[in-house]
Length: 257
Length: 291
Image (cartoon, rainbow over all chains, first blue to last red; front, side, top):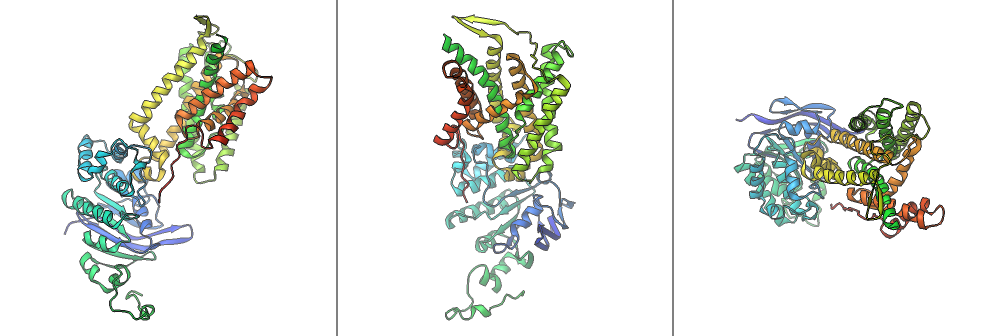
């Protein structure tokens, strides 16, 4: 088994007095896509923010290839090889598409940047077509592609993806996830993927964690998770039995409660 | 001819306002704070140059004093952000506004104590020289102001659009959080923006002092530059320059042809008019965030 690229131990994070992460431990191995599922407010985004250094944890460790990085500034985290593609795209609206992509390579000093620009364009041909346009004028799906492409430019050892499906049509979501899977296979980009859309996330992931209220409540291979009754019921929306006027539902309990 | 001369003199004044306004806008864009000491930065930069070059003080060569004054103000801008403003990170806008106003008071007092409260003029090698050009008499200082401003505009344009640091500054001002995520050291970039606007203020101050006497309260003309920035659409660099030029010309023209006192209110009347007709300013870059 390959060594973990990212290992998180007992991570705790607060917003003021409110504890958002209640001791999270997980690991992401080389070449894997690991997904973290959960509903709104489960702490998924907080987890990514804490890992990438935008928020500082109260307790616990984050190890990137064996080096502890918790509490360090985001720019040094990017430099060490972890890039965070934030939720809701967050592109630079008045810069052109090409400038947005260039900014992704800000921390790099090597000379292969132009090759990687071509690599990004080969995965997202629409960005090449629109390279001179202000990024704010792109559609939502194109902005998401731009955000992913910009993240790739940092040549990360691991990429954190926060809800790439947010606000996209099912068709576009599928398209983006296809590209994510290809990037993982062809470029060997290790990914940690946070999603509400469990169906598509489990479709591309190797391993999955389920988060609820700041805790990890389940973890397993993606295929096993997709087949588990709880995940099916609560995250995939498949009912086990026909319910009569929904009477059964209130009694239904999650196995981890 | 008379009118043309007025316009050129107005443009020269306007360049100074525009340069101060540029400083306002750059800091506003990068940090979302307004530096109300920008006018006093200008005054202080002018006094540093004056203190270095005037015979009553150190008597250095003018062309040596200028870069020293610019560099000193750049360093001062950096230091102010690094030591004071950054500590206020996350505080309300009002707190930062009051802080910068206080900073202005300190600079005014310091300048008065070091170099006197009396109006003094900067001794430049080109003082009093003029060129007659087709019946129009142009002061060398006025031509120099316009030329320097044009050169600075071109340089700044290339800096912001072509260099890695300039593009990163734009990125950090458009989306601070995303800049963080991309590994741009946002805090250092903000300090550098303060340094840049400090240096710009020094240039504006030296140009201004080359035109006439300065005294420590001259920084209050920063208010006019503020109006220029607002007319241009706070947040737009070309807008700030154009706003400055408009105010400079309007001021000169109204003082020649208007009734007494009109030239003093004209810039602000114009500001009100622009705010009523185009609330975003002439060159507003409005961006609505999509969810």
